[in-house]
Image 1 (cartoon, rainbow, N blue to C red):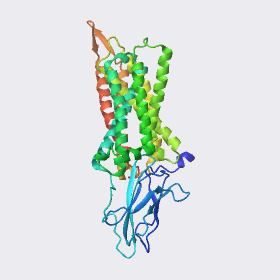
Image 2 (image 1 turned 45 degrees about the vertical axis):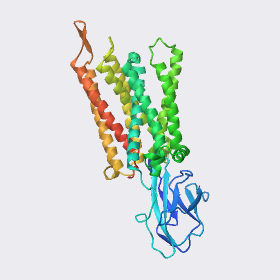
Image 3 (image 1 turned 60 degrees about the vertical axis):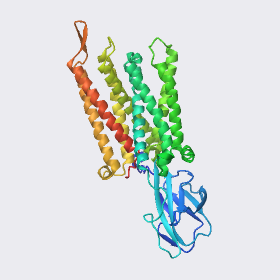
Image 4 (image 1 turned 135 degrees about the vertical axis):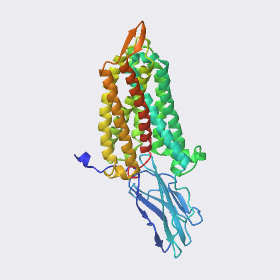
Length: 431
């Protein structure tokens, strides 16, 4: 009960207070400017700048912690600053990997206070193109994991698919998407946080800043895990008797570890990690994303199987085996998703009054549509979907054709749901 009663996650870091406060008039220039955050984000170099009305930077030295409170950060000012207005610009990366930027102003002496609307300011917003690319690559990373989730289908439900070139190709696409989007995310994170354009993706300072934060390290871990999967996939996708059973089991165990690490890099850099009860939320997020990946990846592989089965393949048995896995995946996804929604959505009204809430409702509607299509597919199975032979030629029965249509629609709708999930991961639940 204590877990359920805990406050929901705020997801993005916020400024609790500042010294000087926004709009303060001071008799003399302060020695430093400090801010207190809602969470401990660590010391992030270059996260606080102070500029005069001409846009010249007047801070000196690195960002530091002025006291024993880890959430408080400060930067020293140059000595002897003249009477004028000064704009403080901050840009932090919260523990869930998202940038939070803003400004506040103070004035020294009797001059007018120049606010952020009238001052010359460095970048305080995300570049539009970088933001769009970042969201696209997030969707690609989700899609890559979903395609890799189809490996469970191949190993458990359709072992004949190991030698199918289409199966191998789809799994390679999943691996390539995971690797490429990890590299792209690492390159884009610096400009995304700093409000710079795509020309800054190879800036050494931007790359160094990304490497210093947890998100950058997690992306490198994802890339390493993807490299391990690139080595393991060819060794798993061989006929059953081509590899000794003991060695195959070892490969499967290593694949599970690599897959878990890939999933962990998402959960440890998303909204769940900002929850006060982080371990429960990260665990729920892992279960949610893993179940979705196994389900959607299995649907893609099932569509390939239904479209062109192998000679003599018992499609009905394949569908029946996947139905059990899909049912378990759906239960896990629903339970974990409900828990995560309770933890991230600040109030019921946020479901229609915030962008995050509206996107979440759309995602839930898409998920409900997937369940409806899955029900149609299950009914097709119960009606005896299978194959019959006429004149030595395999002919698909009408229920199986309906099953192919339902599964194809599920794959298309799942693509939309993944896109909504990518958008949700890049915005705050409170906004």
